[in-house]
Amino acid sequence: MAKSKNEASAKSVNPVTKYLRETRAEIAKVTWPTRQEWLRLSGIVLAVTLAMALLLGVTDAVGAQLMNIILYR
Image 1 (cartoon, rainbow, N blue to C red):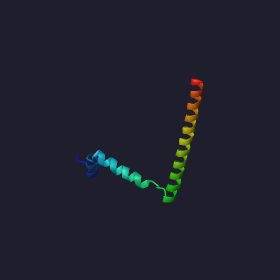
Image 2: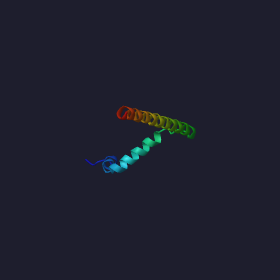
Image 3: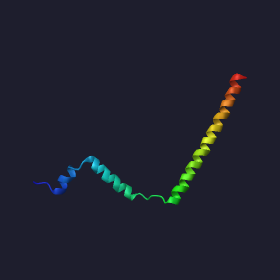
Image 4: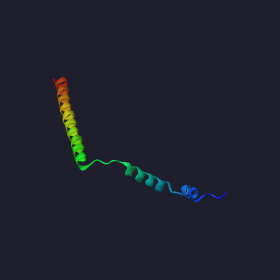
């Protein structure tokens, strides 16, 4: 029995090409944020990152001072 054109072409599709086509289709479904949303959310991420960096830096400095007091006095 002869194979239909769709069956033959489906088996001969390069896996990389198939992956790229499927990826493009999925990206088309994504709801991207507006510029305002992007700026607001990026600002929140930066603020939280800076706050955590400060918190960890202060905690490290206090811990280092406590260790110096405990070990060398």
